[in-house]
Length: 264
Image (cartoon, rainbow, N blue to C red; front, side, top):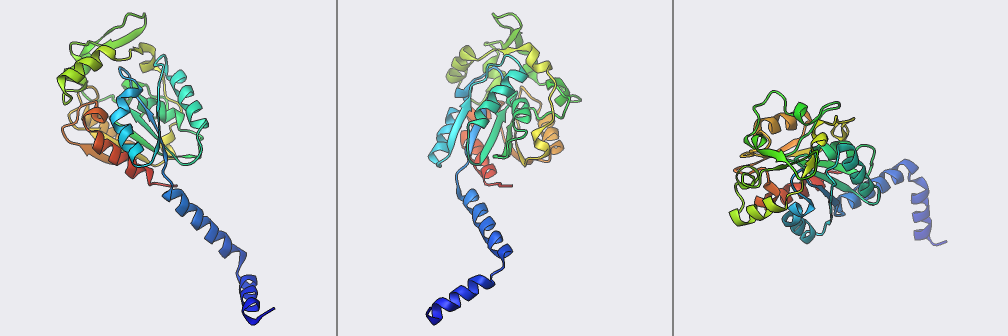
């Protein structure tokens, strides 16, 4: 064995195993942070997965794998189960994002998945254990849009009055687009809003909250209070309606990308 080879062998032999393990762990963390996360987007009531299309385009252009879950909106337990089946099929670091009622869904669905490293709430309900939708915003004045729920054609389901939808759900969206979305809104089971949340994922996961400052469906003060309660990194979207992902897709996509860089 030459002198150089002998020196290298001696150096390697003298290197503590713990140092090697630390180096491997550090490399693994760096690789995870450099890898683009999968982004799982969960829509709210009175909308569907296509409501994320403008945000999805921007995230995909940045190299992320994006999945927009299509909820049945038949009940909280069913919607959580569906979202968990999506998460179970994914590999690699994952960011779980929920809008409006979708916040109820991600709060339950994100529990117990090591690959889910961050939650993002977009003008969303962020309940504590045992809370239903009304409980999560209790103590704050009702938003104007709450006066415009009407029975759907299916018994036990609700929708937002299409005539009021553009003005209370997305007043900052082009009126022609808003009217079209009012006509294609997805009704939700009334029982979904009364279902109690289980153990919340935000207790163990870093969370972000995007507050829509001109929201007419969920009181913005209630949004700020929920963000504070869960210890979220908070981003205020000035002038944003409830449908911020449609009216302000660039800001929403940027916030999700920033959240995706958080690795536990």
